[in-house]
Image (cartoon, rainbow, N blue to C red; front, top):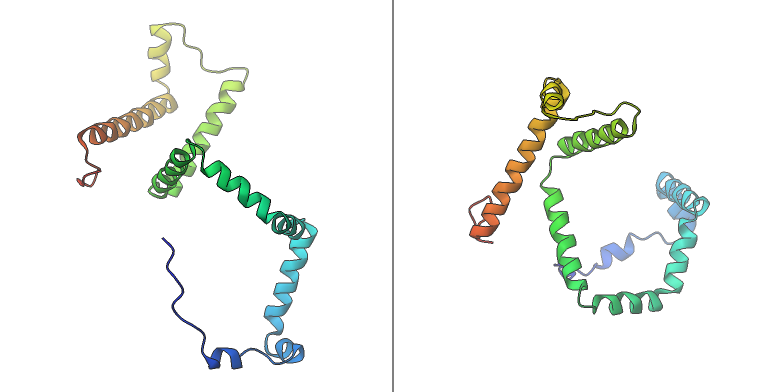
Length: 165
């Protein structure tokens, strides 16, 4: 939850603000140049125009958001989104990237002219001899094991840390 701002800038903060644009430029030339470049980039890509449109319609946008938040499914959606984000934060980014690359590769293979064809037990046993199929099966079984453990923990009311849900 957000915490309130408890520090009020004192006079030393106010006195450190440059008195004139010339002083600002001379004291902070590099930062001002970078800020102007950033604003120009945002302008060229339409970001500033989009931000301005949002600000101009802020009241009606806020009304829509509030109206949607009051719908019966909104609270569940928000809770699910939070749970999804919390769960994703526990994932190893490198492993997730590798897994998603594997999904992309599998999608390409499935669309290719020569996808893996299994028409019976013999074809299945032959496919298991392929190191990539064996590795994929191992990953799949590991995922199923993790899902099963999480489902059992959820049913018993404990998390993987041994804490109550």
